[in-house]
Length: 74
Image (tube, rainbow, N blue to C red):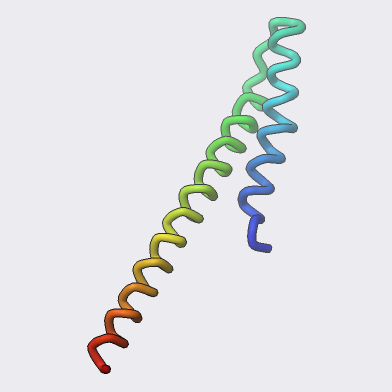
């Protein structure tokens, strides 16, 4: 599954973070479990985005190296 970490991160953010915000705004209650679940979701989402960006950068660098090696052999 290509976007597994991203999907889990978004799900955590929506489920736990949404529940946390609703209870905080409606009742003024601060639940640590829901807060930590929402923060974990945000961290997982950010981590998956940064990992995807670094993988794309590695692929671009690899392709440019292959292209330079092809020029040298010709």
